[in-house]
Amino acid sequence: MKWPSHGSNPQYLYQELGLSLPLDYIDFSANINPLGPPQVLKEKWADFYNEINDYPDPYGVRLKQLIAKKENVHEDTILLGNGGAELITLIGRLLYGKDVLIVSPTFSEYEKACRVNKCTVHYHLLQEPNWGLSVSDLNLEKMNAVFLCHPNNPTGVQYSYSTILAVLEKCEQNGAYLVIDEAFYDFLEDYIPLTPLLQRYPNLILLRSMTKMYSIPGIRLGYVLANWTVIKKLAGYQPHWSVNSLAMMVGEECLREESFTLHTQTYISQERKVLFSFFEKAGFEYSPSRVNFYLVRDSSLTDQLPLFYFLLKKGIVPRHTFNFPNLEGRWLRFAVKSKEENARLMEVLSEWRQQN
Ligand SMILES: Cc1ncc(COP(=O)(O)O)c(C=O)c1O
Image (tube, rainbow, N blue to C red; front, top):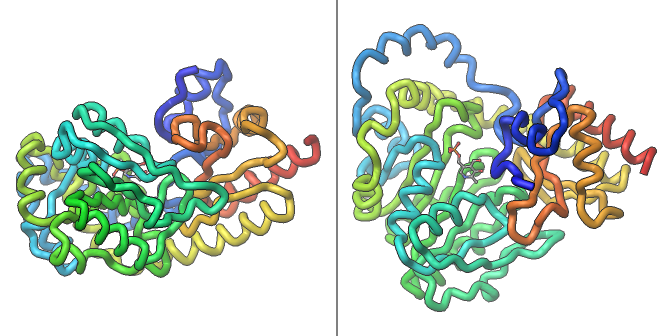
């Protein structure tokens, strides 16, 4: 079986499993904001058209200025990218041939970017059902870099600020970079910014995606915050004009939408509560997520394939977990979606429960 390596585009999953894609399906496999992009993008869409007959600003000055102001950092410590995915590729290049530790289960692209760049990949495996991080258990001997996804994809688990700080200290003592992927940081209701740590710790690399919160995965936009020497190296590996002007204009508008994030956080947290209370009553296990996706399983099953097929046939598309080390199909990941869509998920899971 060749499992698709990411969520979204469910036609490939159905094709691989020899199933036909139902006309009406709900895609729970991509973890983007269910409220959709900010309204302002629709309103300004025609204006964006006027800018596409010129090359993009290769330095993305306007967008960088907005990020610098929002994050209280210098513009030289920002690198824009064609989605977080491109920036992970560049970080892999930075780490060419090195020993890297990936705190797993987590997003699969870190490993891919590192392997392409001949890194030796080591894992620190988090343990279910809490997937918490114990700093004293991290073995950093020989490590040149650590990848930590926070909040973590696919568990949705948030680590405490003191834990992150302790990991950072430990990395510094061992001469290792700490790459913290904050693709979902803005879904956390009580996030403590790590940006002030950048000045003190030149080994810290923060990765941000704008495609999740602003629901613009088709546009591709992200950025790295790091010491300017790291930024300079990463920029050297990047193709010229990598970030197109449409993405930059969209990004500028999104960053001006201050209440959008708060509104999203409140919505997600309410829906998560409804879902989690259903899972408890219906006897499903779930991960202690603090964001817009979570893991679920029917603990009476060893692997979740029967449930997975049942859901797919009903037009509910979860994200499989076969390519997450230490999960290997024992859980399914779902995004928090609209109220109606979440209700449909609960309805179908109740049907499953009645039959199993
Ligand atoms: C943890 C994490 N980081 C980074 C990315 C890349 O996001 P994008 O390239 O859409 O910005 C993803 C996408 O799923 C992700 O889950």
